[in-house]
Image (cartoon, rainbow, N blue to C red):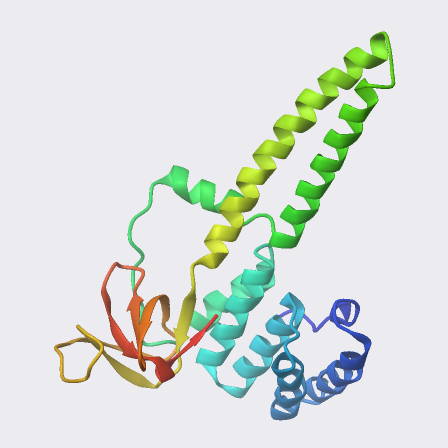
Length: 243
């Protein structure tokens, strides 16, 4: 696993820096529980970052809580899809869970499309969207103030940046819609999945800690979940934690 990094200090408010430092010191001393307590105090205040989630994943993995390490690696990748270390550590942690569920087959072109979509974080997409729209506004404005060859250049730039801005709007919508899909990790050591939101209904199958599920509707204390192989059912809400 890669070494803990300090870039988190620049992405959280100043008052969280001391807490992160305390967690870093505890981690380096192999005091996993103390590190987790410090970093969880940051997340409980509503703050997070890809680095913080990654480090929490490492600490939980060191302590032997595989399901919680999976949860935090998944959260790190949700914030930064390009984090190869988090992806590798997630794959390692997933080897230690009971339910090795196959994914529904997907055409290569759709795998490539998903990879392209996930290559940019939401913040990067927002920055590019702002940049292209700003350049479009500048080129449109230039058309009214320049003449001759410069006006032709401004017109071509307007067409180019207009196309790029339009494509970025579509890409941004695609990226945010993917994030809108809620997934969760099973936290209970073992839980049964039922055909309807009551334990008096038919038991369909069982799941174990660390398994990733897609979250559907919630009724009372029950949530509908779907597995990567397409199976669906209802699970007690307390047995899962959203990514």
